[in-house]
Length: 330
Ligand SMILES: [Ca+2]
Ligand SMILES: [Ca+2]
Ligand SMILES: [Ca+2]
Ligand SMILES: [Ca+2]
Image (cartoon, rainbow, N blue to C red; front, side, top):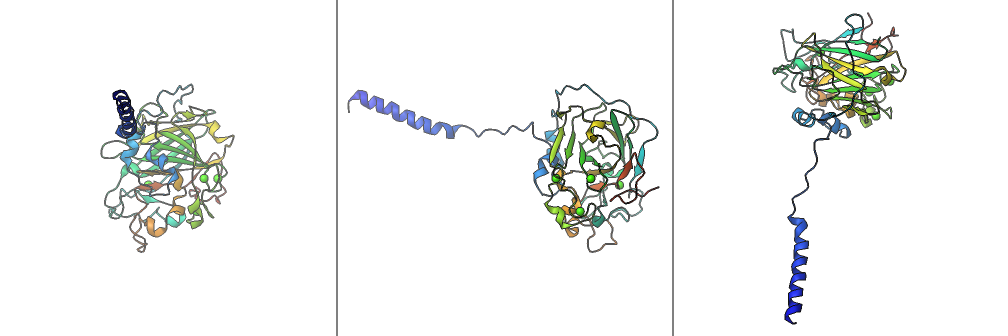
C-alpha cells in the first residue's frame, strides 16, 4: 500500500468511526413538555389512582391556551333566580375525621374532602358548599360554585367539574373541567370540555357501584382544550368578584345541542380524572374506603380521598324524581 492509499484509507476509516460515534455522542432529544395537558387530562387513558401529583398539573398549565383569539366573552351572571342546590359539609362538625352524611360509595355519593387513611386534614377548597346554574341567557349558561373555603395559601388548589346529563338518565354526557381557577377575569385557560362519545359511562346502573362500569373509558373525547376546539369561546372560568369562596363558569348554550332541560352535578378533587367516571365503577368499596365510621368494614377513606361531589340538580324543568342521583325534590 503506497502512502496515498494509506492516507485515503485513514481518512475513510476516520470518517467511518466519526459517523458511527456521532449519533451516540448526541444528547437524547428532550421531550417538548409545554403542550401537554394537565395530569388529569393526561391520565385519561390510565385506569390509575385518581390522585396524580397536583404539582405536575401546575407545571403544565401556564401558557396553555394563550394566544387564542376570542370573539365572544361572557358577561355578568344574573344575581337572582337560577337553579340552586347545596351539599353537605363536615367543617362545622365537632368531630372531624368523619362524614356522617353525604358519603355513600355504593350510591355514588361522596363527602370526603379529607386526606386518605387518617382523615385528619380537611380541605375547604375541595369541600363543595353550594352551586347555582343560571340557564336563562340566550348565549351563556352561568354557574357559580361555592366552596367551604380556599386553601391555606388562599387559592383554589383543586380541580373542579360540572357534569351535565342531557337526557337525564343518570349517565353524564358532558364534563366541564377546571384546573385551579385563579383568574379574576374570564379566561379559557385551565378549562376543558369532555364528552362521552361512546356512551359507556355508568356500567349497568348509573350512580350505583357496579363492576360492569370498570371497562368504561369515561369521558374520552376532548371537545375543548383551553380555547382549542371548534369553538374557542365554548367555556370559561373566573373568580367570583363578589365572593372569595366562589368561582364562576360560563359555557355556551350551543354546547347543549338544543337541549334545554337537563341535570347538573359538581365534583371537586385534588385531581379529577375524566377516564374514571363513574368513580364508583372504577374502584371497589374496599379500595375507595368510606368517610362514615358507621361502615367499619370500609372506614376510613383510602384510595378515593380528597374528593367531593353533589347530587344532580334539575336545570330548567320539574324533575320526575326518578332521575338517578337527583337532589331531593323540594
Ligand atoms: Ca361537601
Ligand atoms: Ca345521560
Ligand atoms: Ca355504575
Ligand atoms: Ca366513554
